[in-house]
Image (cartoon, rainbow, N blue to C red; front, side):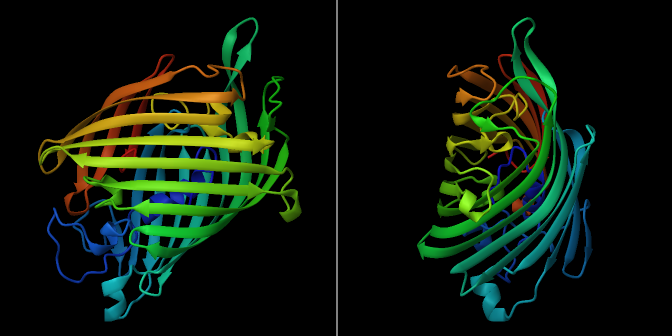
Length: 382
């Protein structure tokens, strides 16, 4: 699923549940250094058989708390649960188990969200389906340019619901291609008179779109990769003919690469690009995928970013990380930092809560030119 992660955090919540909720098909016990079949195929790990203390399990149902903290939503908790469907012995060897997952979120700035996800696999994992639905009531901030006081932060409130579905088929090797649909119905209010002529900032906006996706994934374990590459190309076409208030197009590119420099050091880097054609809703603007500032600070019709991160595993549980990157935003929604380099750098601490699945609790201290932030989450930033 990849709806606009900036605004519709409920969709991300549901996928955070999946990061703890998809199955390991191989029956044999795997060592900590040997990823399971589902991990090599780009599927997040199953923790049902792991010795995890922060977890409630009853049969095939798993409940997991996920702490979060970031400059966009402040500090809060995601509570996620998942139910796994039974498989035959033959199915376990060739494809992950289908799963129904759900989650709820509440943060200290009084943002809340809830989401449900259904994921199915069939045909020896040749076919994959993901469906998601949910609602969010988010209290965000938006940077605006003021002639007298310069930049200022104003309240941006969004309340709405979303529906997403994606069907993919294996093309060859690690390549998958598919189609998706997305619908977001949102009410928003911005406490400023500043105009955003290139975006739809109306109080009630409906966006309906159909899209195509092409993915290549050779990572050894997606939630914390030591080797491999990931590529994703996506286009989403929102049109009044299928119910959207505005006709506009969304295009995005993501590329990530991972390199084990030694037994304890991994170098990871990524590049992302985004563009919007037509009049997109403000909450569907392109953003900069870096740490150190709120994800709503820099919005535009175009964006690009790149970053690199070095990760040191000190022992079985503890690790360190350092990172640096730079981003750009074009056709800015607020006229701030238009086509200027926006830096990001910092360092972080890692605690591996599940060594067998490489699942880290991450605390990052990040700085940019105009701000700094602390990010707390489960799983690596990319």
